[in-house]
Image (tube, rainbow, N blue to C red; front, side, top):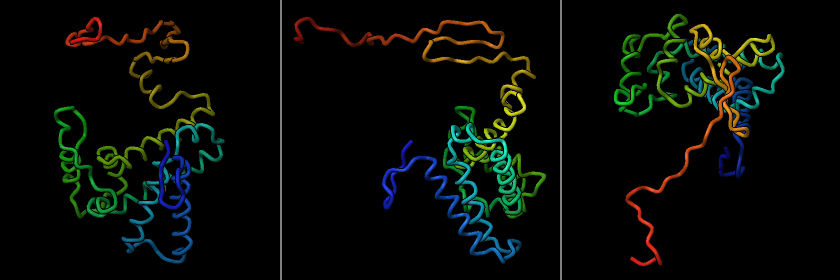
Amino acid sequence: MMYLTKNRGAMTQADVALLYAEALARLYEKHMDEELEGSTVLTQQIVFLNVKTFSFLPAAMIDEMSRKRAEELLREYFKAIDLISTLTPRQFMQVFPVAKDYDGEKYETKDYFFAMEQIGKIGMDNVIGEERIDLFLMEYWNKSITHFLVNGTVIMDRIRSFDGLPSMMAQFMADQGISGHAYYEEEGVMVDGDGKVMKVQKPKRRVPKYIRVLKGGKH
């Protein structure tokens, strides 16, 4: 995906992630002698740049990382989560507002109402805390936070791959006795967890019944 910026023109997703990472490094350098405790605005700024950096990281880039780099990145990821846990829901919402989607009940998905209901269980002005942060983020409704969490999982999967372990989702499915499937688009086949190969037929485009082909092109 390409992104357009006023001064740099077209940029890749990786370029955007790098911009946020560089801004975060400058912020740390500027405030290196300051204590984060008691400085809500600075904490919010660091949280914003951390989340944006991770949310824009391309999964393909993570999949090519060395184990050392992936482990370093995972440590930074958990530090970012720890920092979020020091904020209250109100302070966090000032940085990443709950998305204004209201039809979650209709589609059985998270939405504004669901997220606010979960926040209410903590209290808008109570510190989220380490014991509640994981559930808080999982139940939050904001696109940047969703991408942040997904890429955290991708990083963990990358580290697991060096130990010959399946992805966390594949492991979960195996634990539940669910057979996974792999789709090979070029070959047009799908392989299930038992190695069975199935041919996949692409759906044919049909002309809707209400459209009639007229001979001679006349009405």
